[in-house]
Image (tube, rainbow, N blue to C red; front, top):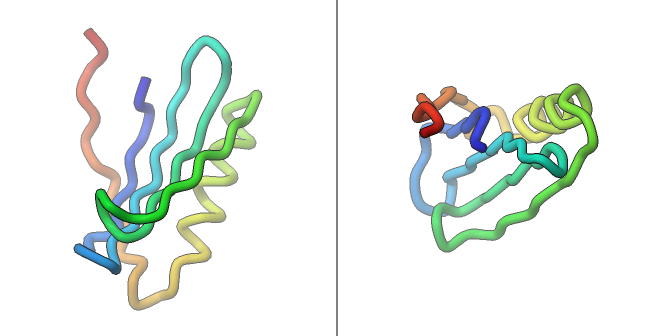
Length: 78
């Protein structure tokens, strides 16, 4: 399930997305740079606090001119 999706309000090559997900097996942070066709990496975690710390680190590592982060609305689980 998607818990959070952060987006840096940029498009194309400057776009960055950070997703926080959770399922029965653990927590996952997926980071993508460069839009839908960009480079993506997933980090697995066993607890929420470590996963959220990674989200914060990824956002903080973005250059200031590209770091206008917005929390995207999530859809309720069905």
